[in-house]
Length: 356
Image 1: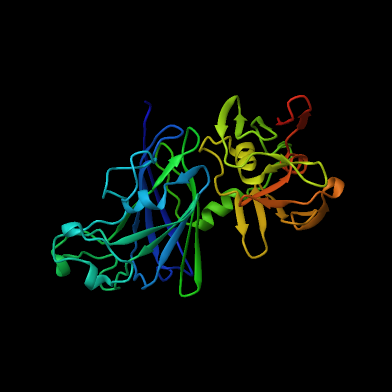
Image 2: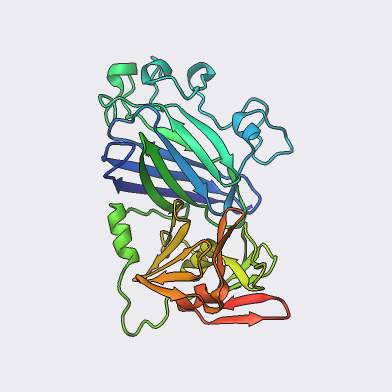
């Protein structure tokens, strides 16, 4: 079985954050297996400022599914994906098999043993989302050696396993957000892939994604994508990918709707991991998805037949509305493809939308 060794280190600068606006390091390490296989990978967070009580992060997986709550807690069964044996789950396990309850503070939870890994607690939210509660880290120890506390010369860190299995061959794509005391922080979208990637700030990533297009650059996308009504298989440059939301015919209009995130990333990046992985953002309050790619901003709002292109309103042809289905934003296939610069075709016999 082919296995990829993956390591990705990301350094971020934050203004309103769980970690009080400090510079922090997030390392993503591990191995990714083929479709249907459990992922063996961890998210390592090394904060260099105080972590408040009640801090947490939430991780949304785009192309991987979360294990059952029982498997995560170590009470699953051998028939479930991710099962590691009775009593062996994915929660923090410290000295003498200590499991953090999500409430105890740093001085109660940490031991006097030489240890630098700080407790966390994973909660399954749904098929694609987990929440990780973080044990607080006092400012006197954040970004410093724990030698005075438990003789560890290392800095405190969280090493959080990813309790998911991949739904398609290739890298795992995810989005990380955080919140504490009603102040939110978006870490952005990340991808587990081969090689080393260093980004200095989220601002630098944004600038890269909004580079102006030259007069010779007529199109925005360079990948061929095919999706069919009712099929969970998307073909990208001749390679089949499993997606979690199949295209369908919209009730009332008879129009074809496609999953915005899956198709947009395939068109813009080809799921190669070498292109823009931060091109899509989601506003849950307004139920609006925004694509920012090569100087062009395209937004779709659920229930609206108007899209916003570079700040200007544009009526979707036929008055077709974008909508949410099974937790995913769906949009008219032709509107999305054409705004991304793709040539769009429809094969009636197979009910397939083709983007070139």
